[in-house]
Amino acid sequence: MAPWLLLATVLGAPGGMGEIGGPRLVPIGDQRSVPDGVVTDLAADPRGFLWIGTTQGLVRFDGYDFRRFVSDERDPGRGPGGNLVRALHVGRDGRLWIGFDRSVVSVLDPEEGRFASYRLGPLEDPRFAGASAMALADDGRGRILVALRGAGIGIVEERPEGPRVRVIRLARAAEPPAPEDLAHAVAAGPEGTVWIGADAGLLTLDGEDRLALAWTARDEGKPDPVYSLLWSGARLWAGTLNGRLLYREGGRVVVVEEPSPETAGLRDTIYRLLALPEAGELWVARATGLELRALADGRLLRRIRPEPDARPDCAPRICGRSPATAPA
Image (cartoon, rainbow, N blue to C red; front, side, top):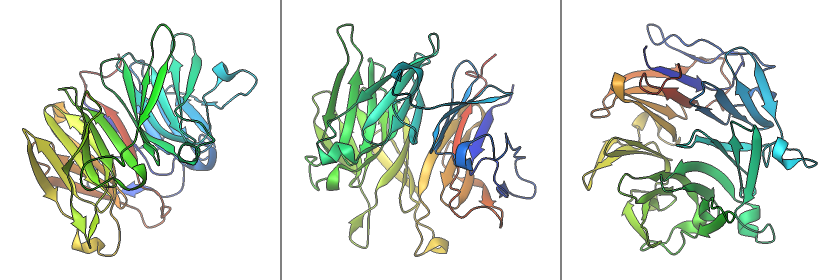
C-alpha cells in the first residue's frame, strides 16, 4: 500500500491545485459537502475516517458520505463545544481533539460517539475570550497541549477525579518576551520537552514549566513567528510566517530555505507540515501552494501552485497516512 496524502484548499470550489506531470489530485465531495466550502483543518483517525474542520461545524467523511456535527446547547455531549473549528488532532489513544475560538477544546470518544468540552479560561478575562486554539498535541503522558493564540499554552489533563486545566503564559519567556502570548503551534518532543511556535520564534517548555527561547530570526527588526511544527524521528521541522523552513536536530538548527525574493512584500506562510517517512517525503503547505521536499534534507522536489481560477484565500491544509499506520 502506498502512502497517501489529502489536501484541501476550498473543498468542492471551482479551480484548485494543478501541475502538468505532477501528482494527480482527485476532488472529494462538492460545494454541498462542506458548509461554505471552507476547510480549516484535516485529520485522519485509525478507523479510516477523515475529519474536516469548517467554519460551521465538524464534518466526518467515511469514504461515502459526509456527516456534520454542530454544538448542541440542550445536550452538550451530542456535539462539539463550538462550530468554528480551528485545529484537529488525533491523540495516541485514537480520540479526536478539536480546537475552537474562545479558548474551547473538545474531545470525541469514538466508541460512545459523545463529546466532552473544556474551556481553558474564564470568558470574563479578555485574553481567553479572544483566544483561539490553533494547534493541539499529545505529549504521551496523558496531557493534551493547546496552542492558544492570545493566551499562551493550555494543558488539559484528564484524571479519574476530574480534568485539570491550566494555561502557561508565554509573555514571561526569557529574552525577548513573547508578544501578547501569541502561540501558533505546539509539539511534544521525544525527550519530554514541549516545543512552541510563537511570535517570538521557537520556544521550549520543560517539565518545571520553565520557558526558553530556542531559535529566532528577524526581518526588518521584528521576529519571524513560527507557525507550524512537526516531529519526524529525532528531527523537529518548523515553518514560519515569512516562509522560512528549518529543522532542529541534535541541538543544531538548519535553515533549509529563507524567504523567497519571488514573494518580496508577500508572506509565503508555512501553515502545515506533513512527513511520510516510508516514502522519504516532506509535504509543505504554504500560502502560495504545496511543496514536495526530500525528508532527508528538505531539498525541493516539486512545487504545486493554485490554478488561476482558484480562490485567492485557498492556502492548503494537509493530512496523510503512511503504510505502517494506514487503516485496514
